[in-house]
Image (cartoon, rainbow, N blue to C red):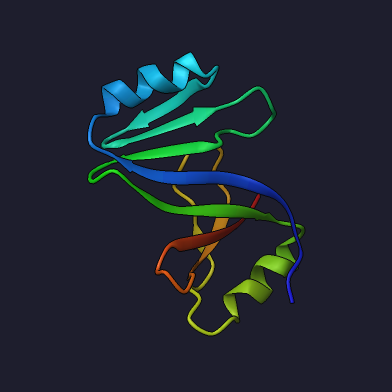
Length: 112
């Protein structure tokens, strides 16, 4: 069993990144980065971002939880079907393990 301490971010597909950028700003989110076809928005807290929007079909793509420790991240990598620990190429950096829920949404466990 692993321990998580917080929800890190949610990930959505959106057909129009410019429209999503304006929509997010209307809700008080700040654009942290626009990298290729991906927007990263942050809120008022210390996290580098809390909302990820990827160009594509409008849908829920998944979410990420913050692991309580590096050993929890390593334990997540041992869960059947999990990815190995990977470098997270997004604002703030860190590492992640990816899993899929029964509906095939991506669940990420992040740390660092």
